[in-house]
Length: 297
Length: 302
Image 1 (tube, each protein chain N blue to C red):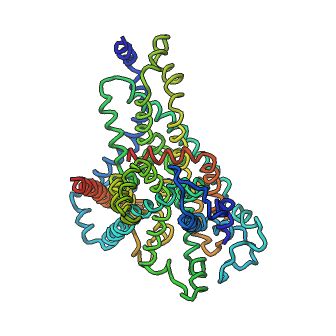
Image 2 (image 1 turned 90 degrees about the horizontal axis):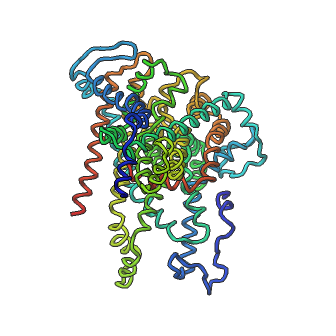
Image 3 (image 1 turned 180 degrees about the horizontal axis):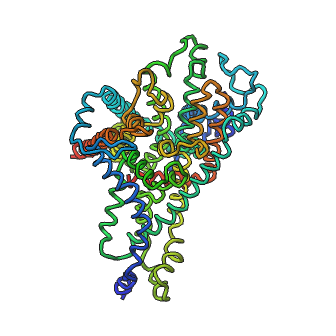
């Protein structure tokens, strides 16, 4: 009886299911999937903003190999993953442990730690540009304690490092919430058993907490590595549109934006860079997932 | 430092050290020194996460004669003034930009809620040939890295003649695949029974959708709405590419312009950033629950 009603509920007017799905499919098709395919196609053409362009085979890709700016971008985006991802896997976990216990006022702290996530990356970037300015707060403090002023935003490497710090700062609260949900599922008995066995806090963290939230750490690793490789706004705002001194702080997505836009934008060449971004992104996902499987066995 | 003053009124400062009344979630007593250490660390992180916003606020309230570069730094403005906010409005049409941001964000909320609810319902409840394929389309779309297709999205907009318009800003994300899949999961978790009753009463598919299914997934819909608003309000890369006419700028692009042109006027830029961030912090303060819930649901889907 129930199952026959279910099947009747499921039987619909012939056109309505597609009517329901149409807006979503249309938008997704026109503005995500079609641009995706057209990026793949354009990568093999010399298309420009105002010129349709022709098929040029692998010319864009062989040009990439000799383009110093491309290698700078690839280097910076890769460095970004290598520095930001470990920080975003570990620090939010520690932060989640800090705010896990329900002590008075803890909801206030949890919300406060989430504030940077809510703010626009432009706001965050400009706040830190001012903080790290030659005459900004951080340098005032450094000078007051006798360290002297540091050119965070003028040195090529310090700039990149500062942008990475800002990315971590903005992401902390987001991943903290993800870890909090995972920590709530760690059986308390495990901690107690370890405590009875005489394990200290550090030991318990490494042998109980970390294994229990391992799959969440993999998830955070996957999410943050894909995001880190595609970094744009932080570096664009802190280093400027041209990517810092001699463009040495350019990231791959900044290069896509710079190459492909404007009236003379080289759409084909920018698409070839985008294809590299796709390939590395997919490779990163597979790498993280594979590491996960190896750990699990 | 001013950050510390903002902490909740002396939360359980161990007034009676002999008898700590603070217990953890399992009713166990927490040792006093451990508690003190915890609050110390919490305040330290608080200074790091909220401090920069307060410093920006403080800078924006400092008058033209006050030294903002002093070392050691002065955290509170000696003579707070709203002068810098007036100057922002004189320098760039900041209220127009705020209105543009609001239009874009509001449109994004409406289209995402309506579009994702409709498509999610179709994927979860309606049976038709090609349903699996339709689901796959959304999953694939979710996996496409948006940063990689912006140039092609821009050429698509140009072909449609929608570059340099607010509609062009909204369109690509107006029914996001992630939201469709979120709504699909929400509808899948509804028991069939609640729709059976409506069906027996003779309600057709639209009536069941509007009167029974949608009211049952209000929570997820709220999450979709909030993240659609925040996403559109905060977005930078796409509006930067699609908008070229300064009169059409959204707040984030306007701020970028302000920073690029008046970088040496820190008070002015500070006031601009506070204008851009204040509405979202207010929204977050009111609707925290949904912000946190959205993190969980969004992360599961990827």
